[in-house]
Amino acid sequence: MTGDTYDPGARLVAPGVGGRIPGSTTAGRRSRERVLQASLDLITEVGIDRVRLAEIARRAEMSSGQVMYYFTSKGHILLETLAWRENLETEQRRRELPGTSAGWPRLRRFVELYLPSGLADPVWILWMEAWARAPHSREVSGFLDALMRPWRDDLAEVVEDGAAAGAFRSVPSTGRFPVRFCAVLDGLAVLMLRQMPELSTTELTDLALDSARAELE
Image (cartoon, rainbow, N blue to C red; front, side, top):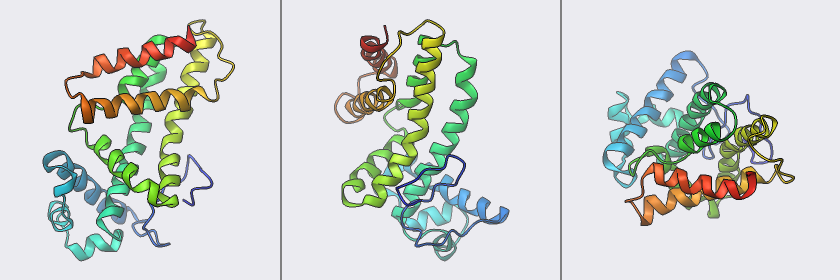
């Protein structure tokens, strides 16, 4: 991953790998996933600030040295954990969305899948940690943009299918709508996570769809 190109079929590698990609064997992939799952579990349980490399290794039933064979630092583990979860969520989303009626029902489901499931949503905790790193690293910025592209691509398809079904009006700037609407969703998510924890996912979803109606109805 260089930050310049994006191949949806390729494995996205987080910055910090140092040019090597260990774990290409079946056993290696399983070992890496044990580390990533341990990282995700710890973030959920104790918060990202209290995650320690030694505890990740203990949870993964590995030594710290074994963990460092696959990853270069705790920060690298966190970015790879985010990519791993995003890849799984993309697979789930692309299985689920086609089974939802085109138009507003499908867009609502897209929004529900996008927004945080709650204040302790580990994927959103990872996103906010990664955003904090992005201004200081072009590599991280490019990596995060690549992680977002499947979301924007899927949203563009939701809008195109909805327009074809007559649920949405044609949007001349469809190509920019996914960028704008994902930015709206990001803002609503941060509003709930950082400022207004009393907002429910349903309320956030309704606010997002109100914004979409301004362009799609």
